[in-house]
Length: 292
Ligand SMILES: C[S@@+](CC[C@H](N)C(=O)[O-])C[C@H]1O[C@@H](n2cnc3c(N)ncnc32)[C@H](O)[C@@H]1O
Image (cartoon, rainbow, N blue to C red; front, top):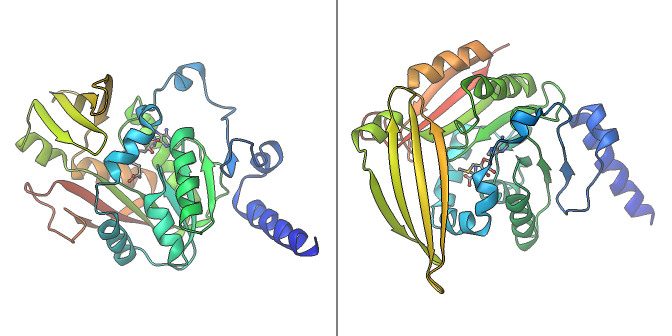
């Protein structure tokens, strides 16, 4: 009993150091199973209408990311950011990076808007016999205090889905606010120029439980990639259609937005093996720092 009290009070001490006080008081551990849930009080009706397609995909999204070389991505993260304090996996999804990093004793918090993906992250955490905070919150409003993180990472194109550019900026301002001086921000998105150079209207891929057929439209004026995904289940042939719209940024636009938010770009890579960022690189991985 005493041991439980000590562990419990340690947890609450940790939470009160990291989370904004109104979050601590109002939203305690919730019954849906992951750590903390933040129904955002400031979220307007218009914003709450924002559709997070990844939540609907749930286990199907897990099947897609499970085929990625997550270990290679984690090795890259470890080369880029120092394990010297608390790290936020912003838009952690199934927690595939955070779980491995926690196994390596990183002090990490996973945050995502998707209930379904956070449930998967919680299961993966248990399977790996590790434990860390999972928080359900919107990237436009972090529930954390100022300057709590030594590093924040946003992996595998989780930036650019918000309804407007100003909302993307809002999330960058939250990154700035919650990073310590000198803290690192790692943003991993698709390389817009590579997408344009290699643009294909149609593509298909096979995953364990389904085939994925993709129809794409490139809106160059708005710099948006509009994708329609058709999932066809292998076992029963059932189809499911999902559409998503991704805002694509050039490197110089990102550099400018970062600067406006107070983040200074240190380096950019074209892939998880430190590839050069050029037209042949499929990724744009930007490492920035909060200077003051
Ligand atoms: C492309 S997935 C990447 C997930 C994870 N980083 C990975 O590499 O597997 C994008 C993630 O962003 C999350 N997301 C989308 N909109 C969000 C928002 N407004 N706030 C927080 N997370 C959001 C989705 O739920 C999803 O987990």
